[in-house]
Length: 329
Ligand code: DGY
Image (cartoon, rainbow, N blue to C red):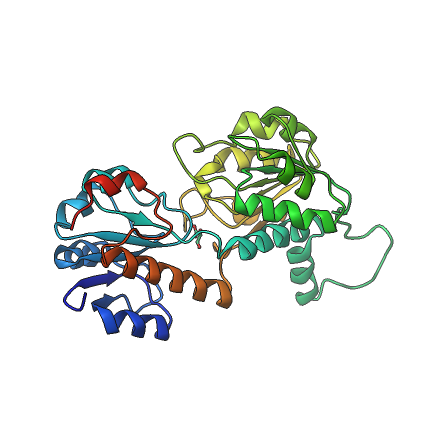
């Protein structure tokens, strides 16, 4: 493997980088910002492996240059930035980093649920600006979270972890998923399967945990928002394009829903103009997995996937198993 060359498009922790350098000839982005497109397209020409970030577009144009590429290890559980079908056609395995970011992302979903309902960010702003002048019984009220109904759309690992946390707050959980989860898991996390309409109309918080695919793009649009209660909140820690942001802006302005907690955006990092003017929305910079512990684990996992894949073995966390029949060597 010593003669193999790899490209790493994000800055990794020093010890993970050192581990890769012992095995490969490594070119790494050393800045904490997305790797420039031109550098990606030039850099991949002579590389055997890629450790990619969610901000890289791994598309046809990329693959046309990646003549020697034998493995892509994505740093992230989501991989909608990669044309996986194009990778499979060329015999290139693609892996991701599931599991290690489940807790961190479930935490952020709950941070947003609590923060938007209890007006935490607004309250902090008001206090810093010297606008906290007295206490009064009916001033600056939020809404209680305990006992409210939580609707989870997408009941994979992260959705399930959010349901587990809801139990501490005595929240009944409704969920909708492509496939129903097993009765024993439903029982364990105390979640009831319902159709989308029922979930949207009965939940006080709707939390999104689906991957971005052609089926889930704009899963939440004008019609879905209109089914939600006027007192309900929308929480998105999945991918921005799952929500039609214009429709959301309209619903927030019109008071069709009470508020939103967003960690991801339709045209990330750009925001739909108007969103920042609203007090009933909390805006985070895509930090669902953003803890020291989780990012270290993601880096270790992505590096392991790449090392195993380039050694000719079946890489763990393979997202395109069909590739094994036609794999590039
Ligand atoms: C992912 O892994 O898909 C997150 O969005 C970034 O960690």
